[in-house]
Each structure stands twice: as C-alpha cells, then as structure tokens.
Length: 453
Image 1 (tube, rainbow, N blue to C red):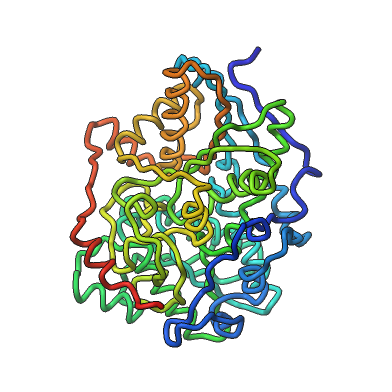
Image 2: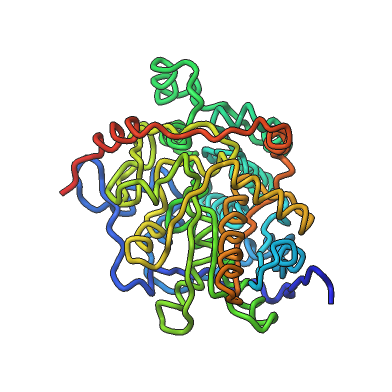
C-alpha cells in the first residue's frame, strides 16, 4: 500500500450549490447593525459596497444556494481538490490516528481563496461593475481576486498590509501579472491611510487598516464595489465547496472524521471545511469535534471579547457581533499575514459561543516546527497560515498516541508556502521569532468598543 493515498473525485462531483449553515443554527445569527442608528442594516445600506447578489446571500437563510454555471466552469480548473491520507506523517509521528488533509493549494492562486473570488467577481461583472477594491494580508486573497479580475475583465485594486507587502514581493508580482494594482497599506491614497501614517509613519499595517482603505476607495465611485476575502457570511458560504467535497471523499475512504481542524484568521478556510460537518452534527446525523487554531499573537477567539465591533480600523463598516480584540488593535508582525485580523467571522464566533467549535492558539515557531515536520513527511511546504492547522492536527494525533486511541483527524491544508520561502529561510536560520501581543493595547482597543444595547 502506498505511503500516501489520494482520494480524487470527478468533475461532475464539484458541488452544484453552496451550503448555508445559517439554516441549521439553533438560534438566528445576531443582526448586522448600522453604526449610526444601532438598527439592523438592510440591503440598501450595503448596496454602495457589495454586489446585490452577495448582499442577498449574506442575509439568506436558505440551506443551499445554486452555484452559477460560469463559476462552476472556472472551478473545473482545479476542483475537485484532492484529499490525502497522510500515512507518511502518521508513521513519522508513530501515532495510531488516521490523518487526512484536504489540499487547496492546487488552485491557480495556490490557496482556497479563488472559491469566493471567482464568485464575487462574477456577480460584480453581471451587475455592470468595472472595478473592485479590496485588502489582502499575506497576499493569497489579493492574488485570487487578481486572477478573478483577469477572467472577468475587471480592474482590481489591492491594499496589501505593509509588513506582508515587504515580506512577500512575489505575491505582489503575481497580482500585477494578472493586471491588478497593489498598494502597501497604510498608504497616502486614502484618508484612512493618511491618518494612520500621521500617527505612526512606520506602521506595519493590519487587515483592519487595509479594509478601511479599500472600503473608502470603493465608496467614492459608482462603478466600483468592495470585495472581502473572509469574515462575511457570503464568503464563508462560497468556501463550503471544500467541506462538501471532503465529505464525499471521506465516503470513498470509508471513514469519517472524529476531529476536524482548521486555521482561523477571518474564518473562511476554516468554515469552508468545517461547516458541512458541523451542519451534519447540528442535524443529528454525525458527531464531530471541531478545532479552530489561531496565532497566539492575534488570539481573537481565545482572548477576545464576543461583542459588536467594526470590521475595520477606520470604523467605516457596519457593526457585527464577533470575537474581537478591538478594531484599533494592530497585531504584531508575523509571517502568517492572513491570520492577522482583530476579529473573527460572526458565524464562526457564534459557533464558538454555542460550544460547537473549540478554539486554541499556538506560537509562530511551534507552528513552523509542525509545518516542517509535515513537509518532510508529505512533500508539500504549507503556507504559514496552514501551519497552524498542521500544528493542531499533529497535537491531536499525539494525544491519540498518549491515550492509545485510533481517531480520524481531518484538516484543511488551505494553501502552499512557495511564495513564503523567506519565512522558511528565517526558520531554517534560527531567526524566526515569537512576537507577543501587548495586552494593554488590547485592553485599550476593547475599551473603545462601540456602545450597543
């Protein structure tokens, strides 16, 4: 038997619809509030920023939403993505656990992000939009939207968090190759960026700051919309193609996960894999334990407050109830730029609050330790963000070894790390550091939460 078993589906097995977990929640999600009135927002409030199709999906309670044929046709370039049984990793760990991983690094952009980028670009094109403004952390989302913009003939303008802009020049080159414009954030192009630079000219930036800049830019022009790569309901919805495929592939393996693991920053790749499995549990069909792994230097789920907050630093967005460290909090620099967000997806936050998801946090170096162990066993170099999921899976596998239990573990390898080799250069040279967040800064940020009754 091969050391590495691959479970592959046919093109006809690409899901025909996205799964909406809202339909199976025991209580409705808390409403999104207008920051001025404190009242629930309606479609008209969001129309200046998002396509109407995305807005209607954001508020939908339907269990399934059809995937448009043009979107599904583009998915065929890399979907269904493979699921692997990690026998070499199991052997290296000497664990009785059965470890599987869903590999989203096979997409043209090298991550799971095109699953929603293609959909959002398609809806914008259908509605006559000419340009999309967005933010990106490590660059995976910006790369994916640049790709989608090229497919649908849209201008893409990306505000990339400054620390990642400097760390990852090849991500910038990727975006520019597909025709996108990429700016370091904070920038002097927006009032939000200028304000941050006036206070701190050497700011490393954050996703919250970059979101403010992109939202400000989109609001200035009628032909421009904003697209978000994580956090919002419709984004998480689009990612559920990952979990739906994984359920079918686990059937091919004649197995079912006892534990599902994903890394969490904004929540999109985590939700994409886990929501179909959580939905099955909520419907009483199958039990599963779900673990969300976040960086110890930006621990919104493990250390944040479940409260209403702005999604951006400039306070331009509506208020959403989520686990947050405060919208003004700027996380320390790290290579897992896609996880440096002050908040968490409202649906993921609600599931943590309901006890359906268990959050945990690990430091940067221990996640890279796990990623290198995985790479040497399985032959794939994970993205720094994905290393958090690898760490979570290995921790659970070693617990199985200690307890003498043979459990099935499934995790999402949400992207490859081949644009992130400076991080591995630092790791291999012993230069990778763990940066602790400043608890006093979090306290100040949380003290500034908007007053909501």
